[in-house]
Length: 133
Image (cartoon, rainbow, N blue to C red):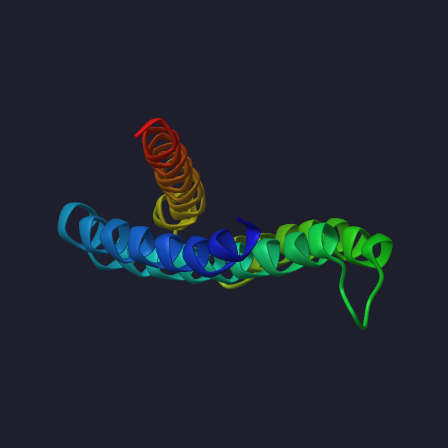
């Protein structure tokens, strides 16, 4: 299950980021669209980091321990906050557009989780009906 989420989640976040960026360009203009694109890139990279670290925590890591992977997950949050601050305060990325793009993280993760839950429920239903027949 975690392997499916590892491959699907960043892809779903990237698709959500593209959609939200397109909407931001159309509805908000160039400044908001660029901000959304930057936020979408941050969201996609964050989704990749979360799924990579979570799979190391759940499955074991091989070259890093589970505890170290959990610590890296906490450090990732600090890095994310620092990157967001730098993009908004130092480099002047549009805050509204950035927020829209960063929202792709939530949408992509929700979609990935819902899709996987539906797929697993269908598989359980199919195995139940196969056992009855």
